[in-house]
Image 1 (tube, helix red, strand yellow):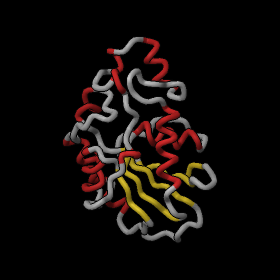
Image 2: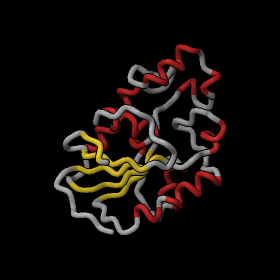
Image 3: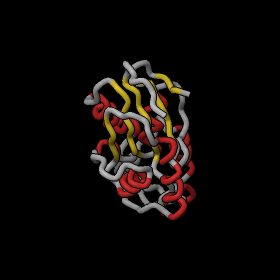
Image 4: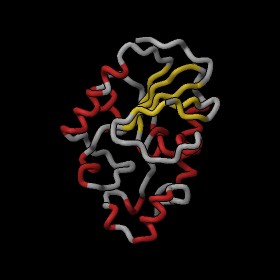
Amino acid sequence: MTYPMPHVLELWLVRHGESTFNAEGRFAGWSDPPLTPAGEAMARALLPRLAGIQFDGIWRSDRIRAQETARLAGFPRVPADARLREIHFGDLEGKTYLEVDEEWQRRLRSFADFAAPGGESTPEVQCRAEDFLAGLAVGRHLIFSHGGWIRCLMAKCGCDRFPDKAELVKLDWSNRKVIP
C-alpha cells in the first residue's frame, strides 16, 4: 500500500524491539544491549506494516538495538545518527527501576523534570531531537529510535506517554499532532 506524499514533515517513529536490558527491567540509555529473541520477533512483525510505504528518508540510532530493529523490519542499510539515541541515564544506567530511590522513580514517571545524575535531562534530549529534525526536508521520514526520545516528541504533540517496544508512532511534526 502506498500513501500520497505529505506536504508536511511527517515522522514515522519506531521504538526498538525488546532488548536484554528491557527484559531485565534495566535502564539502557546509551548502553548497547542486543535484542532478545522476543525483540527480534517484534522487529520482524513491523515488516508487513512498513512494506510498500514510500519514505523520503530513513534513519536510525547508532545503538545495536535500533540497528537490528531496522534490519529485521526490512531496512538493512540505514544511516545512523547519535542524536537519535535514548536519554543518557548516567549513574542510573544499567540499574532497574526498583534499584533507584523513590524520588528518582517519581521523576522518571513524570519525565518532564527528569535529569539523570551524571547523564542527560529530558530538555537536552528534546534539543538533540529537534536539532536532528531541523535537518529533515518536508516529507515522510522513518526513524528507528528509543522510547524516551520518541516520548519527548510525542509530548510536544500533546500525547505524553511512553511508547511500547517496537511500536510505530506517526506524528505530523509540522502541525505538532499525533496521526491516528
